[in-house]
Length: 123
Image (cartoon, rainbow, N blue to C red; front, top):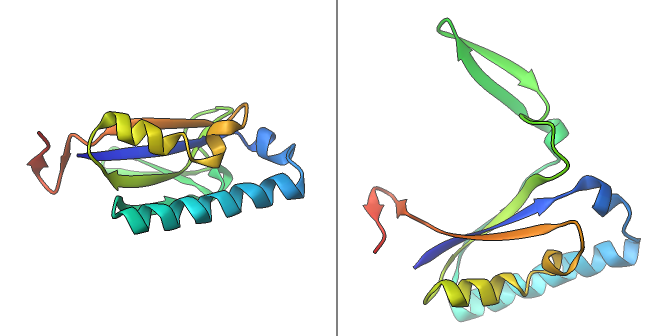
């Protein structure tokens, strides 16, 4: 079964961390990625730039309209994700609990099963 583990970032929370705490998060992600690779459960992982660097694209009267910055005013933004393939939801939750962000008040980690990929519905 495939699961998306998404990490929701609050820039104010990250800014309040010490350099040592930020380094520990980075090191924790590195160890987590290596463990997922070793277990064969990692499909891919990506981190996203700050939402201030985003572009929102809408189409009005057949013409694209581009707006800089995040789509919604929010304290939390999607910061990145892991796409994993594991036995079941319980295992996905077990893995998500190992992500350093899960231990920091104000940051969130969400687990959602993939409904379909490449046109194939998951069982």
